[in-house]
Length: 228
Length: 292
Ligand SMILES: Nc1ncnc2c1ncn2[C@@H]1O[C@H](COP(=O)(O)OP(=O)(O)OP(=O)(O)O)[C@@H](O)[C@H]1O
Ligand SMILES: [Mg+2]
Image (cartoon, rainbow over the protein chains, first blue to last red):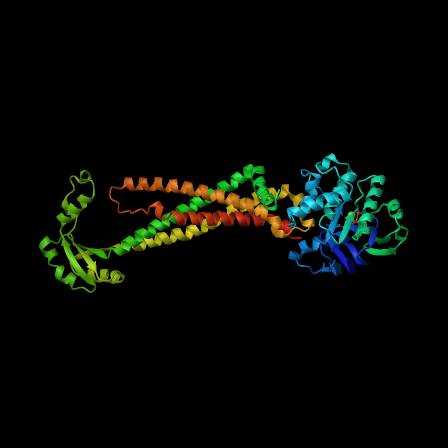
């Protein structure tokens, strides 16, 4: 669940107004595309949700945490309620597929028994069974992104946020990945996907929030066209 | 790969991956501790010396050079009559020379005439705290040229000790800071080569203390290694030095504290500094990553 009310973000270093009064919310269980041209502020919204940066003003609630005021020590707990996915996968090169996913459980203190049960389950869910022993560079881009999705899912988050997850993939892999996100959403996890691939968005009839110049310019099932 | 195994594995991995910097930080810790230990042990020895001197509540009153033995011996009444004097024993020139020669190598003293020594009184006091005052009173007695109180030595040793203490505090502070700085930069290399892993740990919600731990462990290992090596070196150095000092003075008026009686103190001090520098070096190295 995300709630943003009149959120402004000014980057001091470049004196850029990245967000200029953002208002929108994502309810539990929803699937939302966040679209907009380059520099419109999409990644800034994702970073505010994950607590990587703080708003200059306004209110942000993420899974019941007040992100404008959250104490640094509370961030790890808050982040366990999120699964985050990036365009560049961010896998650990010298760890196998299995270990990359298990790593996410291990570092939050999961028990070995639970790790051994859960990791094969999520790898199977994202369609990577049989690839456990491979290293990231022995996989295709689409497979690598599936590893990242498995890692995001493995701690059972309430919400998945993905910043241009298909940016490095061809159209067919991209579509397959979106279908995977849809499957994850059907299983009850909230999904927020940032993208600027028009065909992809139009292939699904989902809610689309379009932003431009740091403001929401449309929000609805036909949002993508309004943004054009 | 268990959680604990992971933490220790990462700690050791960092050390070997950046072998040169690890070597540098251990070396600098050793250097820092050796200097610190040398200064402290010097102070310990001066302190014992001061204590020794203060224990001797004995002062020596030298008689005017031109006074004969009979006249000099006659001063006894007046000396004993002075406040705070418990007893006074007359020692003639010749006796003084005999005593002196007994202490030193007789060959050195060949041809030395007794006239270079003075008649003197060895005086025992009731209260050493009053030593300075009694000394003054004795010096007003006609015929007494000079009163030597060990207090004078004690005072100058105390001054020397105080100067060493101040200088060493500054020096040790600087050295500890330098060690900390080098340690922290060594571990920063490890954090840098693992920055992607750290970013992932943060993203999936690992606690700050969990992210910090491998680097603190790396610092602790380096710090412990440094303090143990420094301790062994200090031990050898101290024993070598003290045996040279003892053998080069035929009288042991310099009573050197044996290493065995300060061993635990040195070890504890070294371990404390090594552990603190290591742990805080690790914490500092990772600090910037944990800000967001
Ligand atoms: N760390 C930063 N410091 C300064 N300015 C920044 C920073 N990050 C982003 N900006 C600026 O803020 C604005 C919004 O950036 P943001 O990354 O949110 O855009 P975006 O919608 O994700 O773009 P893209 O589609 O290219 O990824 C841009 O003008 C960008 O230059
Ligand atoms: Mg972006």
